[in-house]
Length: 258
Length: 280
Image 1 (tube, rainbow over the protein chains, first blue to last red):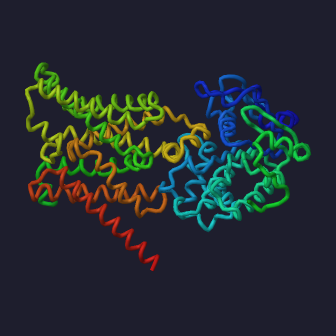
Image 2 (cartoon, each protein chain N blue to C red; image 1 turned 60 degrees about the vertical axis):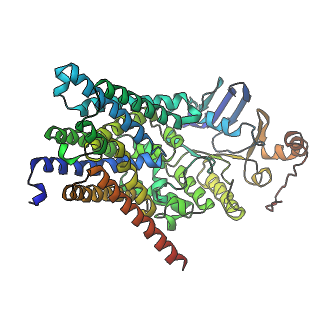
């Protein structure tokens, strides 16, 4: 127990990544403590998704290392502890003939293991996850029939169903209407508070995010800021314009979008 | 017993047809949702090269003349399948290139082997278009063995195949060893293609894998239902097609494909009807 509290959920150590000649990440060092809620922000092409994929072991960095719960990602095998929601738009075929229930149940496959089948207790878990995102009424609908926001809820349910300790969301509100994205943020906050889940939220929605997260990291190839939300807000006006260029207005405590 | 089934060769054809009508659509579902419908075509043409190679070798060596060409076809097909997976890695951004490469290699080799063996014979014609008269007892047992292997694979690997078809990333995150499973899946697809060709013919094998799925995907809810409906459509077409083929004296591959097209049209029509009813 003692050890568990000490190990950060994620530790990225001097990580660099390049696609061919193009540097995407340079000497990134970042720590996500267990129980925190990190907002990872950065402009398009800043390497956010690449960093997440390195953290998840889906991409192999040329330099540096990633540890999850104190274990090097290459050796990490407790993937049921980690939930991941990718950018919806480019990750799945919307005409795929699977029901919402079937999609959510996929989240349990890692836990269930090879040559085994889902038990009725597993099905209960799928229902619980569907309830958690308020989608149980849509369980038997094909995923392609649902709206973008509903689909995204299903993917979150899939990530939640294995009861992860760490949930990583890569721009989950892209393509989701504002109303559902707000209830979505509230749901995340709830998961963080009630379930003591460690959350990493990748977003470019800087204003809304600061109302919910405990820590912020700004990435643009390198980490430009890494600290708690209060420090971020104090330094943010000069930080942000240097970081994003001059056309960005940071909106605090205000859910209206421009 | 049906008069249709009084001859042994028809019993053989019928049994093989029923097994193939189950196998091809089951694998077809995974192939279609992975957007690889053309892989079946590529593999069937490489299978043809195997058959032609066997015919050629049969002229030179007595051993091959006695052997069922289906085995050589399978060997080529499985080799081609493994090769496709490797090519997909070489051309990461042009994965679909693997298909025309293997397909043209298959046709090229076939043509060379056929010309070296002094041309076409009826046997080869039967492999191309399917013939229920040409199914032997040994084919039935071979297809049965394939049936057992394939159903066991799909049954035990269902979760893994399902996740990998839906999104490979999630599969890797669940700790699924995707490379191994995808290669095994391709090899199994190759076996099913070799098994199906006696009935539907090499040129039409892919239709038995893709058309039932194309029909069921329009109307099914959920993945399991898509599989069941595909099998239902596949079996219906195979059985109806074989009856028509026998009574009207037509090539079985063609009648089965026409039956599949009719089923497909009905499912599209049904969906339209339901859609307009919902809207109205």
